[in-house]
Image (cartoon, helix red, strand yellow):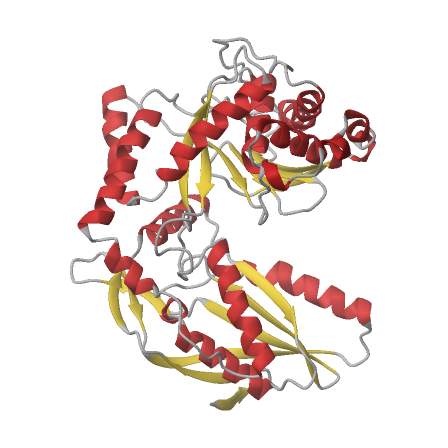
Length: 472
């Protein structure tokens, strides 16, 4: 099973029951489209601590068993006879397990720095999907002991939910000191075959009717046609992070009062803040849906998450009413997020022809939090009193993170997975929104949330029928 190939790499052999050539799944085609548009592969890193006594051989056995168990980890891209991109699942093969050695003199701080650098830089190494396996793994050693297992997983074969499922198998294999036993999860080729069945094709057709209705009247771009640089053309795209413990508590209070979950309450607050800062109302945005609530998709190792689209009208109403509208609209959007992306491309082309010009939704909001709290699980209202919330306002932070190389949207806002604080990471096009507007959006999220937490009748401050006040 283990063969030394160099001073810092061993060869791991694997074999699996599933093998052959299959079409790409809808999720794979969707993520490939995003990769091509953004230039980013969205690779997912991970690190876990190893129990004492584990050897490189133990971990090679665990890796070989993991890859053999999951067809998704044995995928390479190729072409079918018609020239279409497809995936080849290998029945057996070899991959490398890196062995990374930290100098003996390194102490706890040095080890932590090394691991932090590894997690930050290793995912930036791109996969060649036609030649590389979609999983890289390394053992980190210090003073002769295996102390950490690190890996990078390609988004081509897994989304965040699948990554967590694979983590369970990785931890089980590490605990067992070898390969994982028991029944395997549903396989990626099974999913590809099921998406050709008439019943599943009908799901996509229903989604297309919804998307067509949402996209028919959208503007050329969400925040207007970019106006070009207003000063020296140093860079076009930028990044910022805003954190607010007060907004976190305020959103909890709003979600509890309105009987919804924190994700929808947060989305309502954010869309209201965008409307206040830009004058854009109604707002059409892309949201990410994990799709794992669907029958048969809960435990599949595959990229299942896909974009949906939602339109929010926040004009002339209370923030609570926006929460109600978001809750209703997002339920429909969630049910229409499983589809063939090639069909969506066709729908977009037809609508562009009808309009006489191309148009696109160029604002994306992605809630990356692993725990979405429902109203019944939220803290008691007494713990979310306005005074307690306002006391946390001084702890808010806004950090300008400098330029970004490339974007294919005007705004991409990530709600980060942090507890006890609302953390927003925003990337934007400076030709579409100024830094002043972006600061107004980010600080406005806190303002809207705190106002709404204190008063169920708090207005959005957005007049019905307002038009876009975009910086040109």
